[in-house]
Image 1 (cartoon, rainbow over the protein chains, first blue to last red):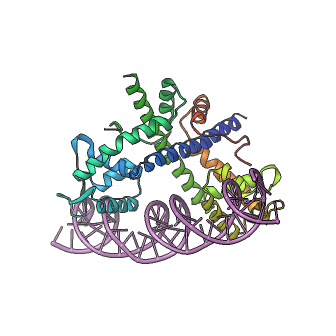
Image 2: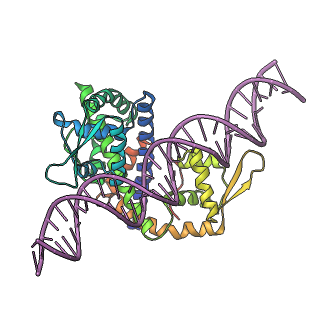
Length: 155
Length: 155
DNA sequence: CTCAGTTTCATGCAATTGCATTGACATTAA
DNA sequence: TTAATGTCAATGCAATTGCATGAAACTGAG
């Protein structure tokens, strides 16, 4: 019986997690795209590369930060490189690898996207929740999601 | 200033929502696939069609239930039909539409998937949370996600 | 050193998704 | 009825994703 009750609650969380995610992501992506800006993953890459005034990262590191599959990241970087937003540099100590760096255009793009992104988040993520609820929700979600990154999210 | 604090909390929720979703969905899908079972969306369709001892639904209705784009559902049903799990019937009152129905194999498949699915949920969704936390989380997520369906989730 | 095993990144190919459009029917207004 | 408009579902095509594999370079045991 106790088991029964738990699995029901777990299901509730599962269903709502998926719906909440779909709902929020769809809206935010649509809002950002509506302004003619690139998709969110591009922003995420650019943000990682723009931290601390611009840093170089190995694809492997980006992979872990962004939770993207290796082959997807490889091609994502192809596209961003083709768009002139990032560069692939040879990696000093490791002949297999590379260092990814945002170009000036890339950093500019990150700055350009941020306001729209920020507004979209503000408008579409949990518009009905109080700050207390937001904190509580972030805490509970943190217990589900893997590890977290320390740094902030925006400019 | 108050604005500043809110947007930060919103960002926290955004980041963690995405990570939690990725984390959980990836694990559950992997677990189900590892048993040689079809993807979760197939289960969702079959479950909808199996409710109340088997019902017929229009694609439009499934679309809304499952939050799938029209063209994706169309092709998802192609695949499931090809696999012999659902049938497309002509729709009585509406010449444009159709009624989707699970075949006996489809209903059997739903029943066959459920235990694995259930176990995967139990194992990978919020394994560390108390029942109280689960309730709280479901409630908060409910405030974010759109509408909800009344019915249960399983067999 | 050398070779097996591992890590990093790329890529061919099939499956899926997104976007735009079409075709068929339904509904409404006149 | 007819024409205009709206809704339901399918599809061609391009973009993206997933999977399996490959090539190059590192690592470490012997």
